[in-house]
Length: 87
Image 1 (cartoon, one colour):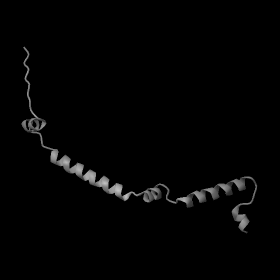
Image 2 (cartoon, helix red, strand yellow):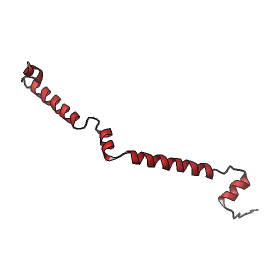
Image 3 (cartoon, rainbow, N blue to C red):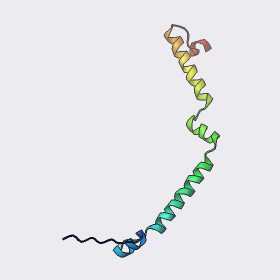
Image 4 (spheres, rainbow, N blue to C red):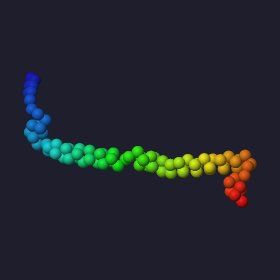
């Protein structure tokens, strides 16, 4: 014997019938908080700030790296280093 029962109800009605909590207000509050936080972070991240975050030393870091490489290459080739040249 087979018995089929079709129930036509909304998710809210099913939650109420089964005694499950209504989480829609909590979900709406969390989504609003997430949206506010993301908006604030996007406003704070202007292009200059992002570049400073990604490249903390900017061009100074690149120049220092180049000086380091040149001094290492000149030392390896038997040349004088920048320390020796200053003396």
